[in-house]
Length: 497
Image (cartoon, rainbow, N blue to C red; front, side, top):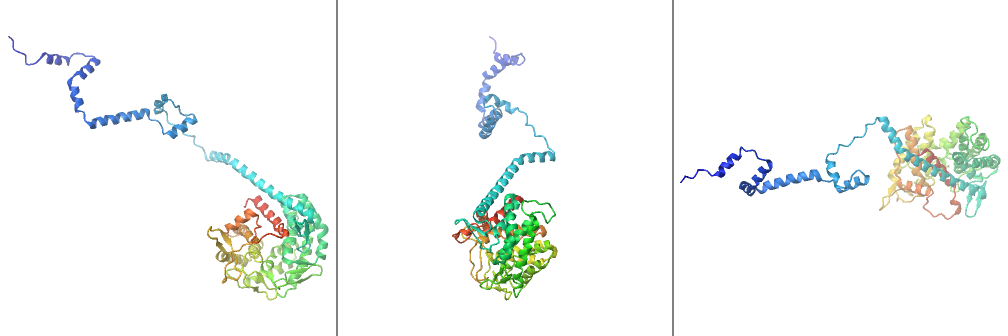
């Protein structure tokens, strides 16, 4: 009986198998059938399992991950993404996006112009529509005046009749003439100019009492503006319909000669408030006082008339007033609203930017701009000081909304503050803004008072807001209404609003 071998035949077949050629399939099946695989699976730790799971998950995300929902939705709407599953793997291998071409600065500028051109066209059409609205309002007002009150100073629209509340010189006709010229309404220019040529010389010599201030700013100023806008001053041919431009200048000079008696009759350089035209006399108001704004709102017109005629007497008499006001005591540049022509001193303590005080501050900077070649720096200094005083003493904010407004000091700086604004206060924001804009072109500084609430009122109600109720029908169409349309049209034309 033979001895058993030290190894089994299974070992022999295994050793020989290492050197025999085996197919890949047979190797895999044999490996799976061996007990070593079972032992390896048992030995597989939890960490190894999680590692394998993570690797599998990353592989899955690389091939199947889609963009966020919002991105997929937006791309699908644009037609740049196919929503079926066949395109998922294609996105992984897609090419990088193409960069836009680099443009030269000139090309960039050209593109920007083409983009913003429609906005400019819309803005231009909006301005034209606003211009036309202002013209329509003016034509409507003139048509009513012509129909019911032609030649009178004012129209009372409710009773549909005219009144001579300013002396009977046809104030609305003359005051509206330069506005019609600016608007290019030749029909109105012809009607107003013809009336002036035929009727005004006789009225200047025959009418009775007129107010120095009102007649200067409306009639004298209107005639001088018409002469300037007619082109005669520049030696141009007749631009507008109507009489020859010299008609306006001759009437202006004739009227100014009658008004000078207010200066010559006063015992001081402060003129009397009223003039009787037909006998060339002057006298103070019933209370003996002149308004501070009235005596200091004559200089622009009289200076310009002296420039046109070469006769300095008009400018000399009017500028004496401002030179005198420079020497009087003030409250941080602010002045009372009354002054006595008998003593040349301020009367009372009432300080405000409304009626009887408003245009004093306005003309300080306007006359300085008009006469800046004459080095009248004291006017600029007075204006600067007054604007600081306005900010300090008159500008307040309402409670609780914090709206900025301009009030009054009826009893002076030591008295109670009055939070009252009238319609002339409302105009101050626009006046001071335009004046400061012009002033900065000559001298770089800024003192615009922050009266946003006034500006809001002006923009909403056309600078005719009043603290009192409007019950008298003559108040509805004062010359300020036509003057306001003039101002608005000029602002729109120059795009300064």
